[in-house]
Length: 209
Image 1: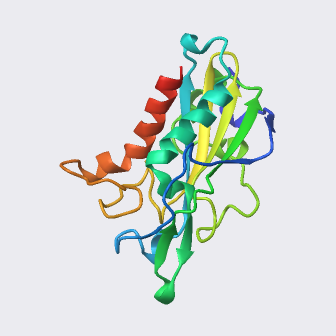
Image 2: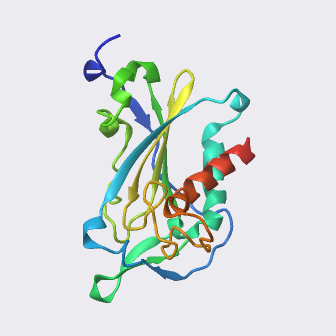
């Protein structure tokens, strides 16, 4: 196998689109907690995840499945379809606008096995797989989540996305008062709350099969 550092491949992307919630959602403002609303947290976190293709999906359009799954998940986690606004004193709030999250369909002519040990962090090809949509790399007034679905033939797909750390999703651990936890936390830990959106989307994928 060739060295991963010498690996070259092409990624063909479709135009970015917005996926709004599947149903109408409340228009309201949700202030961030003091933990999440810190100047040092105003940045995006790039994330990439690889999934094995499920034979049950044969004959189905995976792009449609993901679109529908995200739209259904956003009905319950609607703050992620909104935008961060800066109020007096630089206080951040999430305006639940229902605009949606950014989604990009892409194809990559590379197999997972070709990455070899490069799959361990830091992943050297994140820049190739994750597209920086012009105008979306900020924190205020920008989409809180960008999902890029990539088909990596023949048997796996990758999902790469940047997320706003100021409105923490699955990879960050929000407090129960943050916009990422619109429901009462109950006995769930912060890490469990932080995984809620990821789990909701995964469940939506499952029920769409």
